[in-house]
Length: 155
Image (cartoon, rainbow, N blue to C red; front, side, top):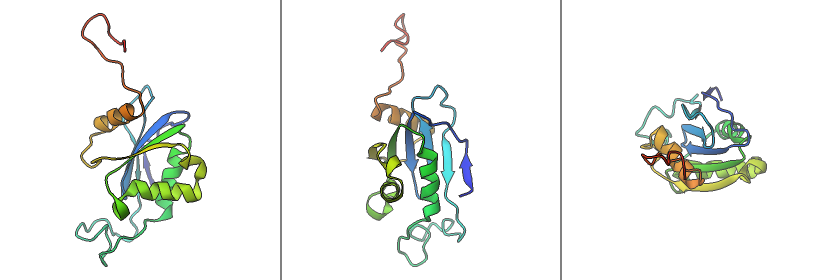
């Protein structure tokens, strides 16, 4: 895998990952700096992903398993997290987060044991801010609120 951008430190943190077959956005939920998520992008050596009229880029119209290299790169990016929340938008064969969980259960049981939730959501339409807030809500790490008076920052 060649494409990992904005790598973030997940050491001892709760991570949320919006998993797609072509790219994944990863946030550290309990981090002080939420400026940008880490992006992991699948390589496309056979140029399958640019033709959107094929089922997941396969001209035969069948779903193909992605390269283990992509799932391995995601595993490496999530390895140092203390807990992992996955978001996926599909079901069945179209469920990328399920493919990741299956890969982790077979190849990286140490990382699979850190998964605390695997949630269905419309990840294509979630902004980075919405992804972060959803992950914080699921993980019980809601941000401190500004009540508009002297209670600023109190729960």
